[in-house]
Image 1 (cartoon, rainbow, N blue to C red):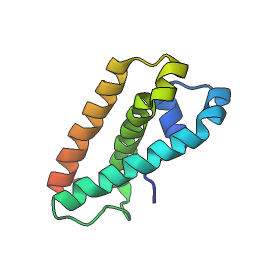
Image 2 (cartoon, rainbow, N blue to C red):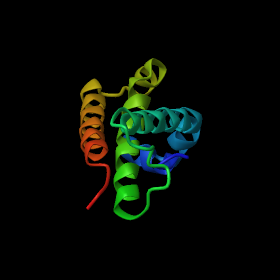
Image 3 (cartoon, helix red, strand yellow):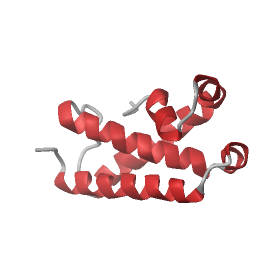
Image 4 (spheres, one colour):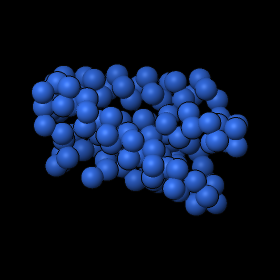
Amino acid sequence: MTYCTSTDVAIRLGLDSAQKARAATRITSAISRATIDIDQMFRDYGRAAPTGATGNMAAILKEINADLAASIYLEDESAFHQAGADPVRSNVLRTRGNAELLRLAHLGTVA
């Protein structure tokens, strides 16, 4: 299960439809990698992976996944050179995603 779609990540990256189509495979791969990171963070806290999340929890996981996937996409060396990505932007996305993920995994739920 993935927590977000390639459209969510493309919005984070500011891609137009043609760029999104060209990057679809790399975005899908980045989403898969981010999903693994999310599941692992929950397991590190002794919690079950939040694969069946609904409501606010699902919405927050979607945002976290999109941030992490976008940072993974930007950190990919080939994407970095082709897109002219800004390493600061990647760091901000990853830091924000990891901070929210850590908080969510620690709490285990959204109130």
